[in-house]
Amino acid sequence: MRPDFSEKGRREMLMWFLRGFRMSSAGRQRMCSAFATPLLILAIGLSAMVVASPARADFRVCNATQNLVGVGIGYRAKAGWITEGWWHIEGSSCKTLIEGPLSSRFYYLYAEDAERGGRWDGPINMCVAEKEFKIAGVTDCVARGFQRAGFQEYDTGEQGNWMVQLTDESTTGGAPAAPGTNSQ
Image (cartoon, rainbow, N blue to C red; front, side):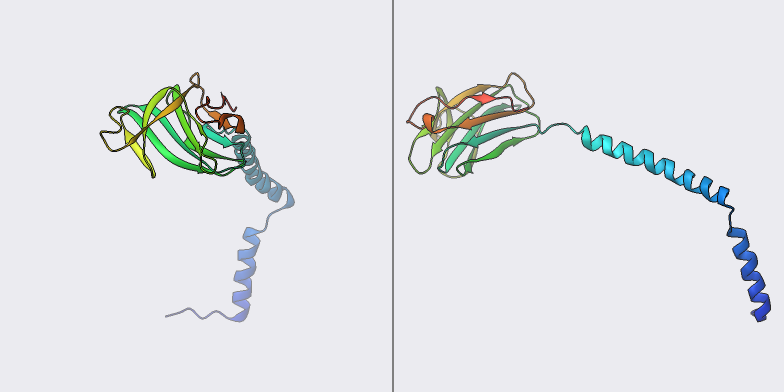
């Protein structure tokens, strides 16, 4: 059975209830301070994390020509040599080939100008394919159904990131590839 409260009884209970939650201005200030301090510390901590976040680490190739370029990369992995491609890089743009900190010191690059037929190559032979590829091993390319291409070696000096810039001067068919830089 539900208790029957008169209107006056309800009003008195409500007033008693509200008085229990009413605070003096000093109490309100302490309450605000108790919540504001941890929130301020949290905001400062998050700001510091954003400002102190590490620079991007990766292997990027920038195409400083006006033509579309196809790029392949080679590197030594735990399981052995790997070549991958093709990244299509529009003129005057860049692409990341390897995301995150570089795990090898030496990387190898081969690129072809898709419009004029020039290439950026080097003396290190590795395997490539006509279409998108990821090939394990660098020997017997033709016997395994791939093509052999000369890759240019880049010594990153164990830097966390690296960038290679392809320029028009290197597209003369067999000329050395563009220099690489630590892009920090």
